[in-house]
Length: 449
Image (cartoon, rainbow, N blue to C red):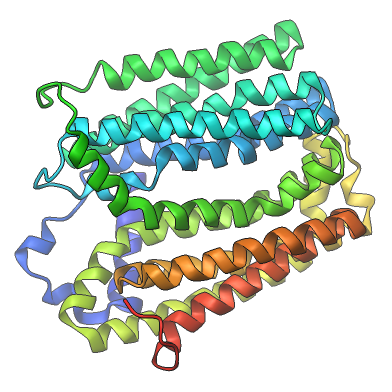
């Protein structure tokens, strides 16, 4: 029932507020682009559980092991492991899932993913070793982070199987694999935390459970694939083709997380835990935006190639509605921010006493405003991808990347928690300004294709 209601609501919005008459003009081929209910259901369930894992386990660890360990877990699982995941992911999924003509075989994609997975492991180990060698990380913290990054490594690796399921029109199998892999990881982690009260032991066995369940629910399920053979020439060509998208995705992930890395560098794990909790509403809004935007990419792309005038009108409408929603979210944050902090205090057994701190409330508002800038970027980012402006996107992401490192480190070092939120706001505003400029003022900007 839920998928049906969601589809009806989404189609109502599209037909009446965004695309107007475009859906009535689609060819019969476009009408067959619907997602099966079981595909939508399992993909939604799997994605939702995976997205909620960090939030749920963070609250759990804080209540069982305290704010310091909770902050460490939050940074390790949702920040460092996420960056490692992006490196392993390499931006392949979007490319893989639409390769219905089998330009590349499954083993070509698997070969690329094995290489990127190895690179992600090297990056994670190197980063942790440097921080330990500089005496920024303790031995126990280094060991925990070294274990937990493999959660991101395995997610990135098993995604290649999910991409193959999607390419074959069996998206529900990818959703089933993601759901059970995540559920088993959660259950093993919770049981062992309750029994051992040890974050390292719990992480070792929960990460191993993710590996074993991924093999069982995805590797063993995928059948009827091509003959086992790696075409190294095709693998090389694919990596070159995907490199710009990978760099954009990697830089985007780091830019969004740079303030968290700065807190980890200059402050303590408790502050890191607070900052990650303040990020939760912003991340949920961004996740919902991505959930809505991904199904729209295909019709918007078709419109760009067939009806440019209508495409430009739709672009402006999406921007207008995004700004309206952004304004509403900012007002809600202003009026209900204290209530959210009070709820967090209840869920964390008043570990951080957040609701009584004006500094934390101001930090929350700044993070929400910055997160809104980031969310508004999302539909415009997809449009620039559709318009094949990846060179422009890569250029601005490189610029913002270096600016973000300087701004974030300076503000966090001087102003602490509030400085992290101010730097995040400055970085997101700059990124928003440049992406908007690339989309709506491209006639005045010469950036090529």
